[in-house]
Amino acid sequence: MLALLTNDDGYEAEGLLKLAREMAKVCDVLVVAPLVDQSGSGHSLTLQRPLRINKVGSNFYSVDGTPTDAVMVAMYGILENKRKPDILISGINRGPNMGDDVTYSGTVSAAFEGAILGIPSIAVSSVATDEIDYAAIARFTRKLAKRVLENGLPGFTLLNVNMPNPPKNGYRGVQITRLGKRVYRDIVVENIDPRGKKYYWIAGEPDWQEFDQSDYSATKAGYVSITPLKMDMTDYTFRDELASWNLKT
Image (tube, rainbow, N blue to C red; front, side, top):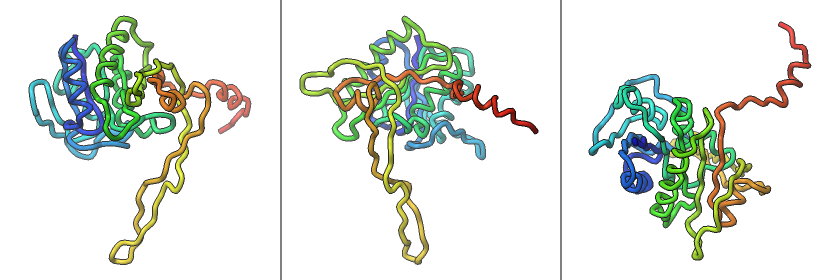
């Protein structure tokens, strides 16, 4: 069995390294990850320049591109489309990927790319950003990967996993969730540089709209959140109403 691992925090990220060691206990592992942090890169591809690959260890490569680039290079460059991974795991991300943020996430997008390529795929993120128990998250991910391989996933569907650090009494369990709703305040910060010119930082303080069965509500309550995500973003309900507009050229 072959597991393809990637992330968006870069090939030296602790979460990726811990996950690789854990998965190596049960299968062959190929790691192909970005050279540097690509957080917020979404599902972007590098199309304006060539990509460089560096072998940094046995079955371990860095790519000077995005997480999606890394998946493409792994499949069509390193593996030369001769051996298809049995599973793709993206992570362990430092920080959550829940709600609206999945559209920005390089971690989730790499898993989407795997799903597009017909590989059962999982995106895994730590809700905590400091003092993260990567070992506990990696152990759970290994167990989840086993279940995915036993049961399979629907086509073009991935699992988006978000895990808080284990509470003192252990996790309360696993909840199968839906995407929450994240709201940012003061998302663009304006300032003046030493030459008197304006510049902007994309920033903002996040807040959440709480509702039942959301990824945010589950992790806040001490549960592991697993949200199945589909590549098909068609709004089937509104599609019929839109057709009733009788639009003409």
